[in-house]
Image (cartoon, rainbow, N blue to C red; front, side):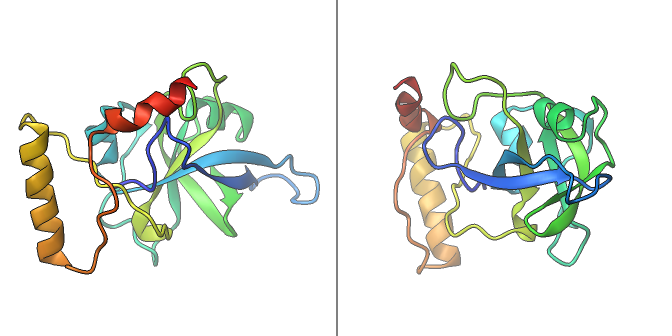
Length: 173
């Protein structure tokens, strides 16, 4: 699951700053935020450069954690090695547990920007996208995913269906 897909118009941000700086003097930066399930890096094919991925133990009651990209580490935490460093964001102190490379989040021609993944179990998002990586044909996989979701909760609205590629053309505008 993810709160939104890269290269689409649906993006969330959070104002963040390092915890080791006086809050009054801290340079605050807007970072992109994706609330995700523990398996998201594998599904997206995003390699982890350091640290760990999320686990089922990363819950609301546990220490807030994030996986950040290189630009986040450089611009906000002023380091290349951000693992176990902390920052303020969303009213909480968050510990960096993983590092990923920079990506393209809003457009294919954008400059690198700070981004973080947060475990969906630690943050609320009213809209979630179910991503599935499979060798099965798209229409077959879509029907099976819809059947599973509705068997779990018939009240969950399935607002749109398709492949991640269906959302990408907007990134070329």
